Length: 185
Image (cartoon, rainbow, N blue to C red):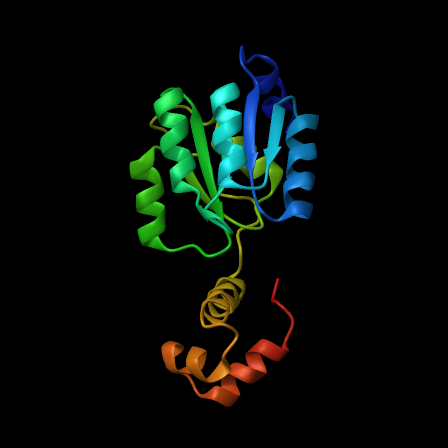
């Protein structure tokens, strides 16, 4: 971790845009990145992010993929237009190969699943161009990824258990048992 902090200290521009609509996560990650040497600007919506980019295009950005007012890919495109050398990391609690590909095509350098550790985010931000960052220290378990996917489909179906079960091709009671349990680690 000290090597990462030293790498941040050596940067000419430490500006960082952090976009996430989950306030506790945004504040926690913002404090963690600030303690590691970045100068974060925390925003909760696409409109706030676009305004922050127009005020000062950041050298780094950590963006949530799914937001209440749209998709984080819009912000990636705005950052790339304002500052093509910016390093952008996408975060999401609902990872999918298609969205990862779309994020990279839009200009993101990496795509991490939530909850992302600050050191994993830092490694991804500081990875050399065209070099893949090291794998995360604490990746989500397969059970957690499955649970996150089920929760996302349940949310998209308006918390309708029968519709969610139909779309996931599982029995309604099985789904109810899964939804009643706490999230796996």
